[in-house]
Length: 276
Image (cartoon, rainbow, N blue to C red; front, side, top):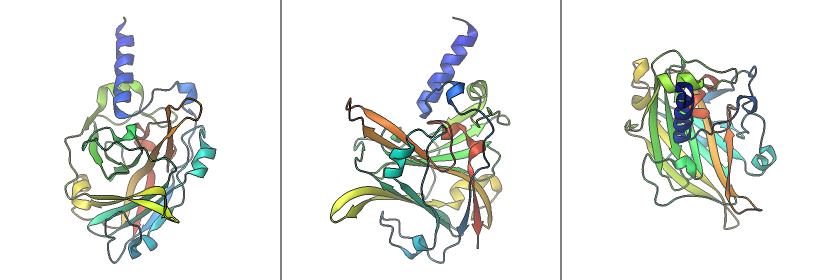
């Protein structure tokens, strides 16, 4: 086997291990991308209680993303409309606060999952943050419907090289991308809960309080201040296929990316504008 073939196979394995499905370039939505979404995020006077219940005043005053959307190409758009995901975001000097509300008629979770395991293999909400915005260092958080967590940091040892669709190129990923599950977001608070209607479970929730000191180091800060962060929000929903009974993945994103590849698409992250 040629050196080029071995390199290509190693890249595919690395992508699979990170949760990104390898897809042909002609299916990746290559082409000029629209500008990233922008969300003005208010500062709240009192933080929400992180308990999985979204009834705090802070969430009533938070910025709202009313729905996450499909990956490039729009696959699953009709199904996403039936299982909407709402995201709320707020901040104060100490923390960035994020809440997901996920309508779901089939919650797929693994009670045996450990901290820092691949939670995206079942239902999960994901958050990506780049406090500087240059794509050289960014953070990933995964949270399951049971409140299990994964937190890790990505480091790029060279300026990122992207395809026209905003994904890191395969060759660059193989050479320059390092990620560390050993990293821990000290002080991170997470809770999950259930949405109910007339006594029946209709979905699930996730709340996060992400301490500034855990993520603002590269900006030389221990607190949040008015300004801008790059971010993306995602939800992975696994549903049984009616025909085969096998589980089928339906990904949803704030800033659209190639199917399953938000972690190698930092250049497509949206913009959170923190305002007083």
